[in-house]
Image (cartoon, rainbow, N blue to C red):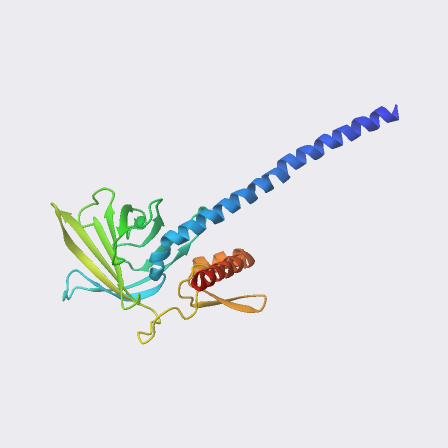
Length: 255
């Protein structure tokens, strides 16, 4: 009587063990694969967004409707990286933004083409743009559909002074031409116009790092809150990828 009962219990235990493995172990393996795919996608996005890295940082300046206009306003903005949802993007937030409260720049599958989702000052209205970089690295974005009255249908973003000045122009479509609504000139906070080049390289994206981080007693730099979070989530992986890129660049240069 005991042996059949023991066999039944053993068989039931085996079934429960298999069910546990299917429920818990298999999803873990799948999650690992998804994570690997996400990392690959983020790496591709970062490469496509590389030309816009210069936007990342804190900015302060002023805006005006036209050159010499006395009715201007002060402006501040913070641009940084975001890696939510397994994709990389460059986002921004403004303090008392007159035209936009925040926004998100994302790459498309076509190199040099980007989408821009901007949030109006009401914090709710979304305006969608698509645009490209020209040979002078000016990003020209056009509204996917015409916006409301006195809202931009075209946004032009460019940099000067070796990336230490950020210029934004907002225009409204008027027939076949565009009429300027306003322009915004910002200077990167902490800029030293006497120096050029990257002093402290961001270990995540390769831009100008302004925040120190450390891992196993070694100091590295990141350029924004998004990169700080990415580093903290997987410092070993970020550093390994960074060192691999530096080695590849060195080998390419010496070959």
